[in-house]
Amino acid sequence: MNSPKTRNMIIIAMYASILSILAQIIIPLPLIPITGQTLAVGLIATIIGSRFSTYTIFVYLALGIIGIPVFSGFTSGLGILFGPTGGYLLGFIPAAFFTGYWLEKRGFTNTHAVIANLLGMVITLVFGVLWLKIFASISWNTAFLTGFMPFLPVGILKAAIAAYLGILIRKRLLSARLLPASSSYKLVD
Image (cartoon, rainbow, N blue to C red):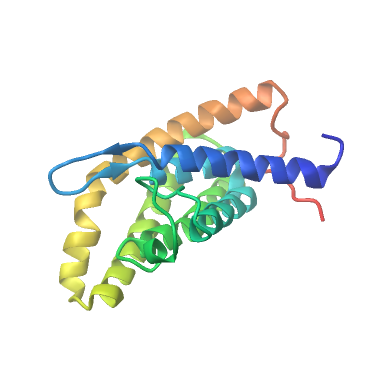
């Protein structure tokens, strides 16, 4: 990979693929299903930082929009993005950016990774609640009780897992010289 632009595209495509794969992990529960999407968003942002993780989310969403079944349950299309779960998908963009940015500014430590991933999880849930409120024309209370509260306990667990694994993988990639020593990848124009 002599070309930095080629390297950048490969990195983004690789992490979009990882997100697409983890999105297919679904654990059905009585009230809500648990998917690997939010875990993947936090994990990716923890490993590669704000810019690359944000571009990765854009690529992932674009793949789903054009019909490649990358969304949870091998779904795709604008109908998913503009359906009841679209707010969560769109919330991945600021969640990934914020998580990576927090770590770049405060350091890639386990403590900061947990904090960043918890805040990123809340950002995703807030976008989901806002979308539900508008999309379903329901009260704020109902949107909060159905779109935030049921996801909170599992979201906390996934944020902790993403933080721990993200820092571990990041350290290993750094030691193998597969990740630049700077706080995050630098995009090359």
